[in-house]
Amino acid sequence: MNKTLLITGGNGFIGSNFIHYFLKKYPDYRLINVDKLTYAGSKANLREVESFENYHFIQGDIADESLMKSIFSIYDISGVIHFAAESHVDRSIENATSFIESNVLGTTTLLQAARESWEMKGELATRRFHHISTDEVYGSLGTDGKFNEETPYDPRNPYSASKASANMLVKSFGNTYGMNIVISSSSNNYGPMQHEEKLIPTIISKSLKGEPIPVYGDGKNVRDWLHVQDHCRALDLIFHQANPTETYNIGGGNEVTNIELAMKICDILDHLNPENHSCKELIAFTKDRPGHDSRYAVDDTKLRKKLGWAPTVDLDTGLKNTVEWYVEQWELTTQQSL
Ligand code: NAD
Image (cartoon, rainbow, N blue to C red; front, side, top):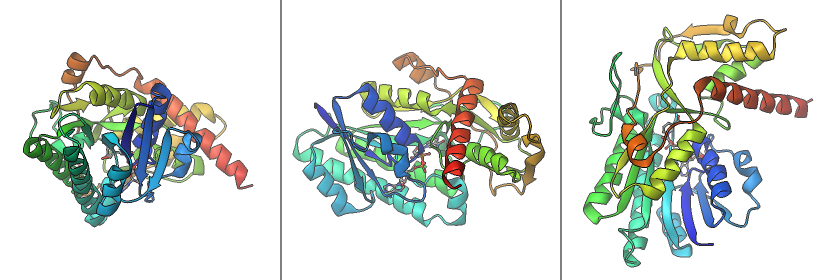
């Protein structure tokens, strides 16, 4: 076993997909996953790897200073890939406190623990701290243009403000202490193992339950969808190959409005269950989210040119596989509850 990485938030949507991807591709790495198991973290997401010798789970909070220090003293952590965060915009609008605690204070606590440990070992400039961020830090776009890595941060809700603050802190540790940091900011992810509160799982689960499918405002907000497997491949490249202090944007190249997305998912569901009424009849426009960003799109030319990445999953195929995965989970759960 050659390297031990600390993964934070590995029980969430992207973290769990990443752990599966990484353990399969790199059996020589050992992964330590620290996750608080908030409502968003699921042990079931990682059941298949629980017994792996090179996987170890620690339930804990990244804002817990003594726990973070003890992890760095017990294990020889050679890199950190930091996913843990409160991630749902609507919840941040209801109450921002946990977003500041996990995303800002938690990131700072983790940075400090890594810095102290790596400084003592004389490895500050070599061991990597990879912070997982979002295109939402850049704010909102009109109908044209894309965010690139130089776009100034302009967060417009408490979630994106907490992520932009975390990005700034990560950058400051690179500049002040010479820490080997990298930041990647991706567009909206989709795929298996996402919490039911997010848009795509909500559309699917409401449709399966025959309940109204809520779509904010007029449904015209545009998001660029990235399959989580393509995100994992990008993170692998960035973690292993980016130069210190670099930032990378990761996009899906799949811009659609929320209503177009809901229609696409309904088409797939209707095809799977032709005897049911059309899922489209369940779509219900609801009061818009306050301060709802109208469009996000990232320019990921840097990632494509410098690291040779390109997404491999087209939206229609990715959505079909994703819908089928959730339908299968739904059928398993309903069978178990009979
Ligand atoms: P998620 O909400 O599904 O998972 C977050 C995980 O972090 C959960 O397992 C939770 O238990 C854990 N966690 C939360 N606070 C913690 C704390 N204080 N200490 C330890 N663990 C804690 O989120 P996700 O969608 O997988 O997103 C992962 C990362 O990617 C986040 O940083 C998010 O900002 C970023 N991101 C997500 C998307 C997306 O579309 N989902 C897009 C761009 C960036």
